[in-house]
Image: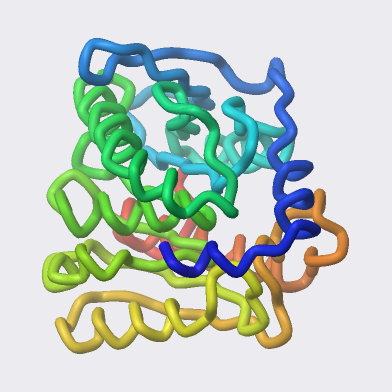
Length: 261
């Protein structure tokens, strides 16, 4: 979590804009319970008969509780179009919003967020539209820390992880020995989460002989795949990362390297 401490005011403002909320008709709002309290989620359902493989999307740190935006909605719809039941979890549902410049609060709330995500996975396991043996996670920044942490703690519920510019907290690195297949995507000029964390994760997974792939984007900053941050956005890198993400999901959720049908 130390990587967030270096964020400057301009970058914090940028991430705030990135997470500006909009309730879009393109995805369906839902809710599940965690420790008896409600957690908001949005989901996109493929056409055709299920059960479907699923992808759980986790947003990054933001000063807004309602972290969903048009770019997350588009990814949700695109994944549903490829045949994945896709769920975006608003894991700030039971806490205040925590921005990237609040590492102390982030550490305090992290277990609450993990519990919410675990409850969301349990709810998906009971959803007749979802194949519980084919559930992946796709995280961005803080969402990647949470995705990787979930994989380290309870790998049996997760078939694959796609992590954008995140890392595995030191306290949970023991879990690398049982991590599900993981795709690491990171820019080598990341000012919020140092690329060293990607290399550290790569080394851990290599040591434990866990299946994984890594792509480091030369010259890319944090959130390089979000057009809402034009000074960080790189269209070519964003498209390459998305192509790698969908290929990785297909290989690990469908048993091949073709998109789900």
